[in-house]
Image (spheres, one colour):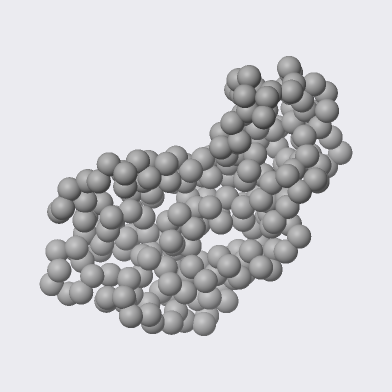
Length: 232
C-alpha cells in the first residue's frame, strides 16, 4: 500500500490519546477508535506512521498491532485472555528442568531459580519443579492467585503480556518483563537458555539465529509497549 498521508500527530481525545494522520484519527484494524492510555504511547505509534516511506510496511507496526490486540481482542473478552495466559502457568518452562546429574540442570538452577523464587515471593505462591518433560500439575492455589493477578491487569498490560508469555513459553517470565526495573534482554536470554545451550554444544544455525533475533526484537518491543502504556 502506498503512503496516503503527509503529517502524523498525537491528539488528546475524550478517554485517551489518538494518532492522527492529516488530522484524522486512526482506528484499529477492527474498526474501533484507537484510543491509547498515554501520550508517550501515542507518540511512539505516531512515530511508526511517520517512519513509513512511499510504501507502507505492515510488518513495521509492532506497537500499533499490540494496541489493536488490546482494543480488538483483549477488551471484548478479558476472561478468555486470562484463561489463555493461565495455561502457560500450568506448563511454565522455568519449572521443567533437566534430570539430576545433567550439566544443564546446574545452568537452569542458576538462571531460572532466581526468577521462579522471586515470583513465588512476590505473589505468595508455590511452583512445582519438575525433572524431565512429564507434566505435573501446579497447585490449585497457585493458579487461583495468578488468575487474580492477571485479572487485575489492564487491557494494554494483558496485550503486552500475551506476546511476552507466548514468546518465552513462560508466564513467570512474561510477568517479570512487566516490571519497569526488569532487563528484557536478560529475561529473553533466560527464556532461551535451553536453545542457547544446544547451540553451544552443536553449533549455531544461521536460520535459527535469525529467527531468534526477530523474536528477541518482538519481546523487547512488547516490554517497551507496556512501559509506554503504563507510564513507567
